[in-house]
Image 1 (cartoon, one colour):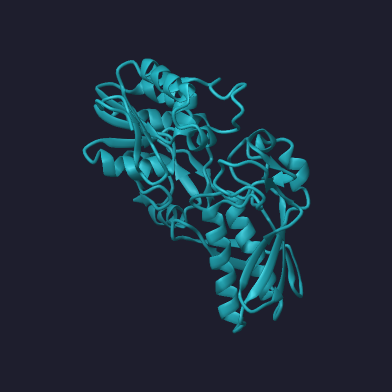
Image 2: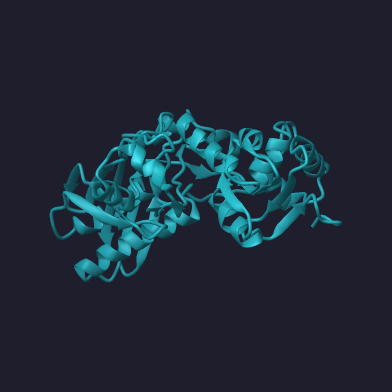
Length: 341
């Protein structure tokens, strides 16, 4: 049984511990909405802000011609997401971000509003409650709504489906989040240069229900192998598989130290600079004039703090190989190389 969101093969003993009928479990796992843990517990995933925004946008376009009470949208991992539409009127729709088992997800229950009108092509705009990028070095260019590239693709694909279903030439859609500005103040957005609301995010379309139990699950995975790559996210996971095909790759996010404590044998820590270098030196950006590690890399690639943070990561790694990669998979730093790039 494969979890389609992260392509993880669920061990048979974990499946047996759930006590659920296999057919029921397979159906739920296939939907992408649940995670099976090593102790047999089952946790519920949610949908990202990107998926929720996509649903509101598509529903708003569909509402131009018909009544809409639910909608299905594509996700970046190829699964369909199904969401209810809480309000609908011609050219306007409201979709709420569903509840999940992510205890610290402060965006649960937020309303996303889509407003649409017919147009010649497809245009997506960020309205009230979606933050605006005020600094360089982020995935979105300065001055634009904080809708990351992957969810923007997802929103466009959802709107395209609606346009084709109705036989329109195109649609102009504005997405807003009425409570976004208030919630944005509870996030780190202002510190990284996003103001006025929350960011629309999501590389898979699904929110993982991270908690201590999942930490235990990852610990089990790490302990079961003597050749492991600890990686920080999905981009790291993808390229770690390509760079180190004979290793077991485990995504630990920011819990690098915890993963390292569970690891033995041949260990590699591989990921994007924002997590790996800040793990090495959590204070590397203090009084640097830069909001993110990416901004520092782009504007001052020879900055002494980059080298210092990498050396500190090597020291923290206790013999593990440290590999820092770019978003395209290029190796930026490698503790086993004679010369760092």
